Image (cartoon, rainbow, N blue to C red; front, side, top):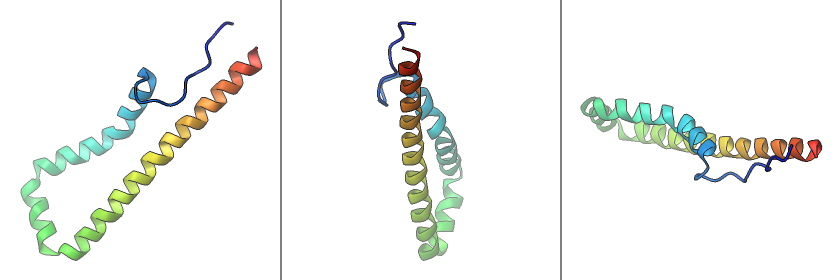
Amino acid sequence: MNQKPPPAFTPFNKRDMITLAKMLGPLAFVLVIGIYFHEFVWHAVNSNIGINMGILSAASFGIFLILSRLIEAQEDFRIIERFGYEAKQ
């Protein structure tokens, strides 16, 4: 029962790296598809810059918001793990 309490969220922890990879995987997939179809994407953006820049900015804000909330949830999970550890002691 002498387990160490879980460390704080760091990008250098193996478990946290796996979590970050799972969070960023879909984003990387979309970026790869966008690069593959770069000519179509570039033509679509140039056809109506105002609307497409609004869409891209909203998507960027959404990505930032989702990733920040997932990192906060990971930190909350660590707090719950630490509580479980302390309760067992």
